[in-house]
Amino acid sequence: MSKIHRIKCGNVNCHIIDNGTSGILVDTGKKEFLDKVMEACRSYNVKLIILTHAHFDHAENAARISDTLGIPIGMNENDRNLIQSNSNQSLSAATILGKIVLSASLREFSVRSIPEFKPDVWLHNDDRLDDYGIDARILSLPGHTDGSIGIDVDGKHFIAGDALMNMFYPTVSMLYHNKDSMLESARKISNIGNRIIYFGHGKPVLNKNWVK
Ligand SMILES: [Zn+2]
Image (cartoon, rainbow, N blue to C red; front, side, top):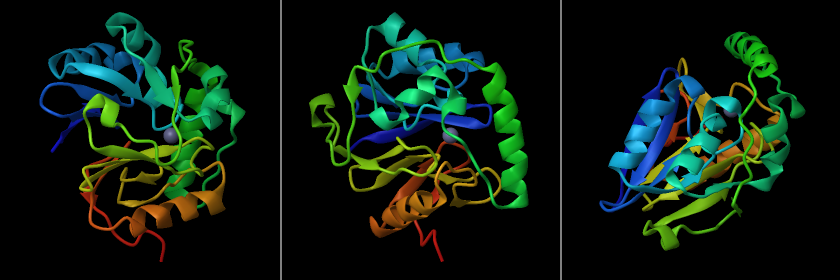
């Protein structure tokens, strides 16, 4: 059984899946939190970085951590265009809170650039992480971005990235590149059943019916 450690980086979460001897870092945080995330990677002997998607608040430290620790980066290839610029996939929002978050995000997209990296592994739906000593599988969750993925660990924990959010309250993603796919992905998460859901933003909650 693995443990999930939430590494809080301001309003963004990174997670480490820890099997007791080594770990996988899921998302890397903003550059201001590089030292904190790097230290956590060292203490849990992290061997792989997975990006749930390539928005800068999740991917900004990927290159530095990968280079310093000499470990690979895995993500879905449909987010490849976001590494060049987060503006390469448009974002929309429906709710008032969502629109506030959207305008703050777009402002940051225009001034942030992700230090360049080349992913070593393209991750696809149903890929397993047994090679890293962890009982987990990748779930493709397009919508927030085209290449968003989640990770189902031990049939118990689910790391959702930004496919769901808990910034103000637990909800389907307030920002999306494609609304229909985003809702379909949220339904997919509901259907996996009893899990603790870990978000890119906010505290974990129990899985539920996300789309009413
Ligand atoms: Zn995002």
